[in-house]
Length: 411
Image 1 (cartoon, rainbow, N blue to C red):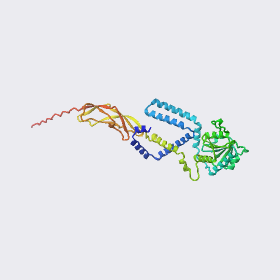
Image 2: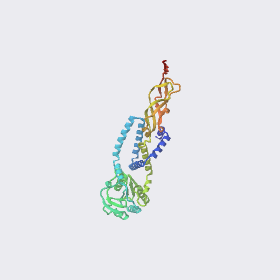
Image 3: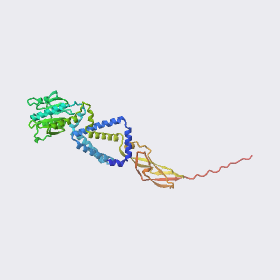
Image 4: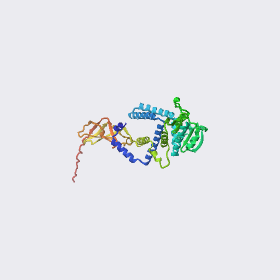
């Protein structure tokens, strides 16, 4: 693609156009690019979470073939790819309906209460206690996705997170110990909650209902689920549709800290600026793509070609001759440049010929790109036909007027 652009447009012309475009850009243009960049970033993050990278690669390949076929003038191929892309978009909307719904819900949610260090200490202490005494537990840490539509049953609590509260909720003699505990920020909002069971768990894995419930919620949201097995005492986490076995307490605290850094914006100590450095690859790619779309579709900074009919003009006709006719009187000129310049081409683009000093009545003059008068930022690629037929008509000599006789009458 880079080589194709290089062949269609010299680098100095493209560099000059980019410099002029950015210098003439206004504040509204920058806001326009930033808005598109934000939307593209959200889309990229959704694609990453939905594990749809292969789908994105397929769309990029089809889009590339579509652009190449369009520029090559392949009408049938362009129509076929346009239909395929339309059908694929409709199919994707149905296939990723659940993920799209989560994406739309995520846009409306921005602010979360911070999880303090004491919350991490309370969670790790409680998990170790459950693992040591083989007490089954299922703790859900809410991320940015709303969870209400995935939950059923349970009781509202709104209590402050502490190891004593968690140990009392999962006591085997309590009524809601078989359900899940939901933690949002620094509060335990619900206990005894039932979660959706995963349909992808292997029945031969030996894992119980708690693991299936944790994996089911991790497949439909960005929540972090902590599971303690009642029979083996093992500790596992579920997130992003995956179950991970944690070997010791250090790995548990590391997972909790990572979840905090990736999903929750801290509001104490002026740390929201750290969000600018999260996911640098997606943000850089979104900004680059946003700038490229702005340059191509708004500013027209994209190489293109146009064929126009230009009149053929003859200059410096020798003395004693007059122009009889030019065949053809117009030439097809192929111009190459940026789309914005080709779209604003002046109508006076023309081919200028000079008659040789030793003229003949009938002669064939060659046409070449250097004879075309065009704007400076447009390149003349070709001229058709290769020559024109020029007919010169000699001027007829004028006879001198007869001398006038004057008669004098004598008186």
